Image (tube, rainbow, N blue to C red):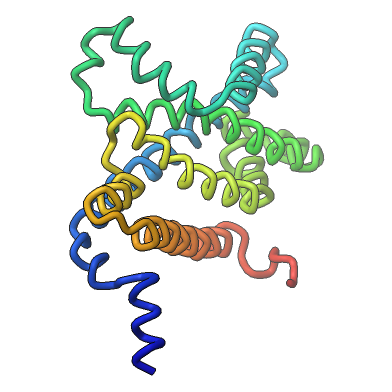
Length: 235
């Protein structure tokens, strides 16, 4: 038994990880802050892009489509570097912003393009009869989207939104490359100080997995809130 415990400790020493709890907590805080902020902003930005895409007006739909294609065809790391180095060059005042704010901007610009396509598919999935019924009872365009189209469309795309949210959380790991002290940075600090890659990278992976489970749980609550269990497809 002692040999087994010794083998476990040699592969993964919990005591070493415990010495870096504060650093991991700080990294988790920055990771969650960046992911949550970028998620909210990208949903708003993505909704705006989606509405532009389906507006039927070329001066709105064409720029939105071009932006989405450009973002989806270039690496996120490149976009982060462009925001990190490019925006302060064009707007010097932005150079005084903390790196995490620039990282959130880059994540929002990137994720917003994917959210736009997800939201657009959800809006187009609502049967045309729903819109016609809303028009028949005298709803304005704003009321149609608020009370009829958006609630149904969002319910239809919750699984896709969850998948994109999981990707966004993992994408925050790239912010460590612009000196944001995130979860990956905490693990790298442990490995740099103690040369213990198992403790560093397995801990990072485990924490990301726990965060994903929390997001999955929250998404189920939102789905039940918006749609009710009667709309859910049995597993």
